[in-house]
Amino acid sequence: MRRIEWPLHIVRRVAIGVVLVAILAVAVPLSVNWITDKRARCAEGVVERGEDNECVGVTDGTYLFAGHLEAVRKKIEEENHRVEKEAGKDYVSVAYMTSFTLTDDDSNSEESVRHELEGAYLAQQRHNNGDLAASPKIRLLIANTGSSSRQWRHTVDELIARKDSDDRLVAVAGLGPSTAQNLAALQRLSEYGIAMVASTMTATNIRDIKGFVRVAPTNEDEAYAASAYLKRKKIHTAVVVQDAAQNNLYAKTLGSAFARVFPDRNGHRLVAEAMTYDSSESTGWKNELRYMPGQLCDQKPQVVYFAGRGQHLTHFLHAIANRSCQERQFTVIAGDDTTNLTAQELARAAETKVGVFYTGLAHPDMWKKEPNAVSGPSAGFFQDGGDLDRWFPNDPRHDGQAIMAHDAVLTAAHGIQMAARWQGEVTGGAVARMFHQMDGSQQVAGASGFISFQNNGNPRNKAVPILALDRQGRAVFVEASAAGGKPPGGR
Image (cartoon, rainbow, N blue to C red; front, side):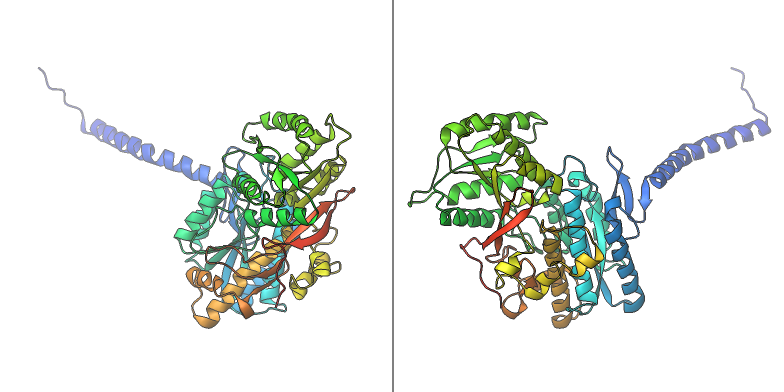
């Protein structure tokens, strides 16, 4: 067989071509990935994720997650920059984490998360510059986990990266509603030694997580407080309506707790087994709620205990309003997720003319009627003409969300101050250990009540406001209750 010999210049060209092809095989995908990542980047620490291309992650206020947050975002950014400039390196960071880019899938409303961020900013101001001024100073980071916290892992990993960076992150507050996604986020933050303070998370089975406490009463406490209130009002019969969705930890623990505590030997009883609907079944849950009033007409309970999200409650109330037994009056009592409804949604609920009560987490009027149950100085900031009114005018905050976020960040700030004074070095682990020293004179003087913690992270006998929905759709404070019947006085 004759041997083919290629000229040297052709061999060189072929060799160079092979090398170029190899380089392009590596370089083109890298370039595409770099361009893709660049396009997906919304800002430093914030990227696009998910089918809806939500911008999620962590910002110091330089990035705006949603337009309605602009006023409070700007103030947080200004305060953070002032701390960096004036405190040198004598500062730590606390992140406020929840879903800030909302869709119809979320139980929170834009109003509620905006109020949370406003309350968090107030706590930052009080610690850095106000009546509770202490060191080290705090930078407040804004952490968005995306609608329904679907992008929680990216945001949590971004927070973990800031633990050992110049941000010196030691605590995360807020943490969103009681869902499986947010529980997973808690567990990952705990693994990395970051202190956590939940503001509105109430599911009873979220507990005993290292570094975690909450300033909100548990669902069990809310159910016990509601039961105590109903019994004082001579209500003897009830039925439970409960969301059976597997992911809804809030509804599951709320309904089971009420069903356990309301019946007793004094004639208080449930007239039927719990009536369930499944909110995970797309729009099918609306049909399930629509059929319930007929059964309630037959069962004739004095009160219906609704263990579901606020957005489901409004559909249930409209179903009851169209009941066949119009001569029978129904009263519905629900849990704290009702506070996530917008003013417009509450007004539509009031149009049904069904009596609605619910256990809230906080209310500005609680201080006026129960002055010993909450801290007067803290509550004063939430009254008409207070700092929040001046900073964010024309934004009513009767939903209590600002108070709860304030108390959560205030708890983190108190732990930071205690760790600095008693241990010197402020780390997430040191702050978390201080949570369990917050008793007696070291209680957190919250606007929602005086706060100390059990070993499992739950607050001790926290005040639970009983709220009523008036004909204009406004939340009216009725009285303060608690798991033990009545809340303890402050110090």
